[in-house]
Length: 256
Image (tube, rainbow, N blue to C red):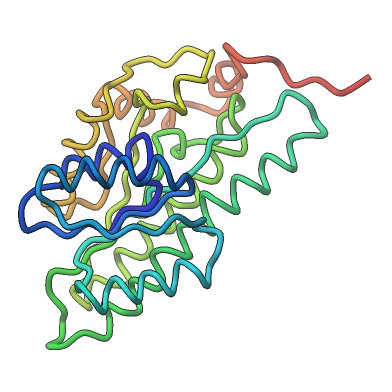
């Protein structure tokens, strides 16, 4: 199962996994784009079920996850749906943060928890062939001045996913956190700020799938961004203060 499968990394993952004898459960908010992706996956031999809905609809996605599991038995759930929202005004910060957390955090909760509940009830115990993945970002390694709402929401998912991995290890359920750098998608195409080490979505899907197959705790890429983020995490605070600025974007200003 892949959420946010109608575009971007979600679409690339769906196309990567699509093959003969593979069952894909795909969801996205845009029914036309979702069906286009589904048809492309079917052309590669996959059996595809779709649900055009919002991950913020907790009852709706919980019901759909239950239906998919009852019909196909879910073995991998990728909570990928997310948004990158920001604001150049003080007044807009709260709205951007609230909406970001609603989709990037609560939407992930609405996806992984129903799946974990179903997987944990399987027998024999510990269960086998059960895994969930949470989409974070390299921006989640630190609070970024250029994207307070996005980076902090992704940080929440990073830490939450790492905690879930430990909590469910004894049950046999794998939990991975995905932390991509800049990936060429419709979302990043709207970004006017510098995007170093940008990689194509299909390449990102390959890296993610390879990491999930190995049940890696964190799937962070590209390596250049891994190096930069780890360096930033270990710099003294006074240096971080000097470089943590909204470079490349409109500076935050109060409305007159």
